[in-house]
Length: 462
Image 1 (cartoon, one colour):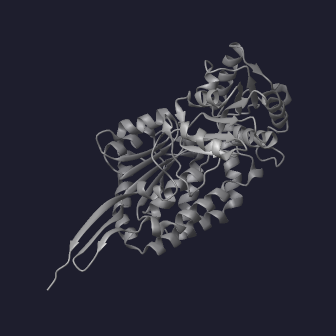
Image 2 (cartoon, rainbow, N blue to C red):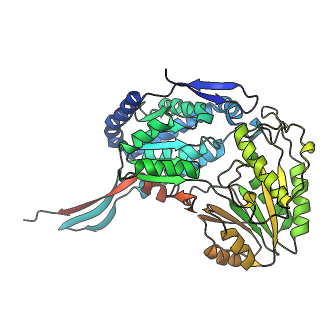
Image 3 (tube, helix red, strand yellow):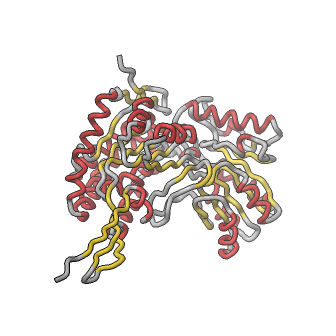
């Protein structure tokens, strides 16, 4: 008997949804249908594909009231934030607007003798393995350009957000994307890896853990299948001596605590110039104390539970280890009575931390941040680069030129100045080191889901 996949709600521990994964035979049939349908989809005019994708996202927007409630139930985000529609719409609009230019042929010559050009062709079937922390935002990063470029898409969503995948399929179908061109599938890990190993896809996009990314790479080994891997981070913030202190506190602490710290590019460690350190810490603690941990359906709640009790246990372990090694925890969990020792976890600010502690080296993916004083830029750069990850860095200073110079020395995918935790669709979303590889969004996002094809056409002359 096939084992079902159960989505356990972090709100109350109940079974929110239960689905039966496809068998290997059923999964291969789904891929075959996608491959068979892709050609006709790619043959549609670009403007038609764009219109249908945008109509699909509009249909998703029409489901907003239900989707916001479902996000709370599936992964615990408070309903007060209204879901992910702002970012979904912004990214869809931008990738739609640049599609014609991004996919246009690169013409080397168009004379009476030759037509020489490079065209972008769809890779065929794109496999998107989406995470639970931002189940719509992360998925559309690849789904939208892949469909617009003429690919079929097979989506496998995280077990924690199974319903989000179903909503995306429902919306795309309503928008006019054929059912076989965009499919949401429920798969177990083994079938997922088998499909990749069998070279079922032209491109595989995975967002998740380093361990998960390594499994994808192993499955793809020898198939020459292109992969895009976004594997998380341990993103730092740096507050220089000339920074706007209040703005830095508001920005960095929101970056650390929003979504209960469950952000790929969330701030997990902060380095503050020694002249501002004491004031920053005091204001950071006050900022955290202004949060309210509780039931995500309550409009007064600013922090919901973590998506799963086992994720909260990881963070609790990191905090306990740090304190045992000499760190000081500045937040009394008793100030957040909703902390139940399970998925509901009180936010925490740690000082007297160092890089020997797991909480300053391992990804936390929870509502905890360590803060360290630094004496100058050189020390800050050394500490920020002392990390296995490289997704984003947030620098706070009034000196934009100095920030640019620092950026050149930082091992990261994105350098932010006086902001953090935001994906600009006009810029490439990428990383280095254990954060993975590949490029999403911007015109480069279209390069990942297409391949170059050269045309060297000699014209007949009389």
